[in-house]
Length: 116
Image (tube, rainbow, N blue to C red; front, side, top):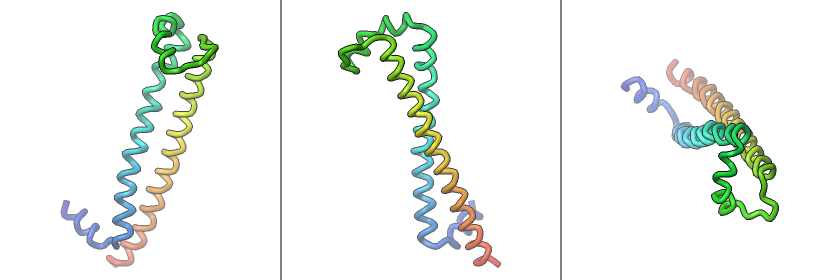
């Protein structure tokens, strides 16, 4: 803990702020990753066990009010939602990893100039 406090004292206010933003964005990326992972099970159930969808069709009708609601349109919407969650999660993860890498490189140079 002493080492972290020493490093923290060498940082300027702007890198400290960016660090806090990265911590907050890691929480957001984690939530989107959780959503994309948890969407796998309903997606697989919809494509493997059609009886489960017909049993819960009255719940689906309450949330999605479409005039031509049938199993195929529900599958299409579920597939679109699943792929959308994966794409958003992947893009956020790539942006977050790029930001962390850029932050680490920027502060490594600054810290090495201040320490040595």
